Image (cartoon, rainbow, N blue to C red; front, side):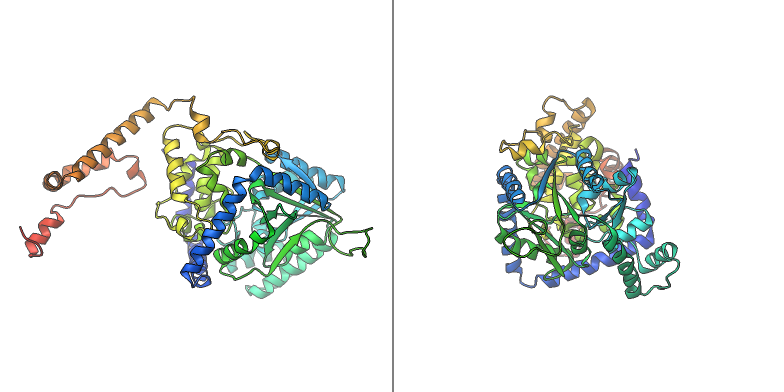
Length: 507
């Protein structure tokens, strides 16, 4: 059976130019990350520290969210809670319409992609203006981001130059990267000056001080959050951390893991709107209003499961994608989801349900490279195996909206809506039970054979004599494993027999 994901992956494998662009970019990012962490012991200490900070935040998530709301409100921000994508879109649309704005300046925000904000704004006659260069490129192309850090990583400069020629025919930039970038800067400057509402994501939200931290390299994020009169920040509830001092190690891990930089060009710390009417002089720049939208959208259900909660440690560096052999071959669009790569393979089935996205958990060779480079030590292969098992059992991951952000913020533990909790009352289909029983029997036989050297030698010797028949049996019984893998073939002569014949071991 050809599924949606398999069909997407098949088409992606046929796009040689896109694959070459992604391969080249990923190789460069891998080398930059390697150079950014020359001291292995320092890296492991930083990873331990990063994991501890994120685990502490998740262990105290309800209290920290309450503290964040209180501090942000005291700083003059307006805090909104959104249970799902529809509610988040409604909140943002309401803010934009209340100011009579016809457009919204957008810094790069994966959460806005997650909730489908651009399409929602367009349906209501409001223009979303992407200001990040990569996001601008894919907006002009009518595509979705291919990578969470580098949205247009699948395009080369010839494709980008052609896009700019179509959309800005009055300009003549050729394929020169500096001239193309300068053109984007000129176009954006006009929009920064004229647009009243700006929107951004949030890298980290500090509960202690009510501070929103945004990092970037282009300056568009800073313009989007300071030039307009209104700044809307939208983020998932998991992005909160306890103290300001926790930012330094996380930023070190994030920037080095993502792009190999020691620090990004801009580190923005936003603690409220411009201040006026106080004891000191009035501030002359910055937004007059700052709104923070805290999105749940299924995160409380993930948080409720002690094992799957590790998914929420993610700091969105993209290192797992850069090192993933599956992502580097099919690219982000091959997954068909907002979050691609190993991150998407564990996050999307939980956000959208295993019945819809469970097959993404199979989009991995389980080589472990993602876990080896994850700056906060998310055990991605282990979580993939957990999701694979539950998908095979016919179970369903938490549905979006099962636990509301108000329940989390009130200090009560989120309801147990993880995959196991939601599927206890639902028995797996008969065919799935038979398949699991057959697999269990095969592994028991495998264990018995390998527990006895004599039994192992006799069986492998027999299989070697009947290798043609054994190949047929393996090919037929290993389905659906062999649907995406080459079935193993038994050699006509064992390694021991070859070694004895060559005189490398005794009879």
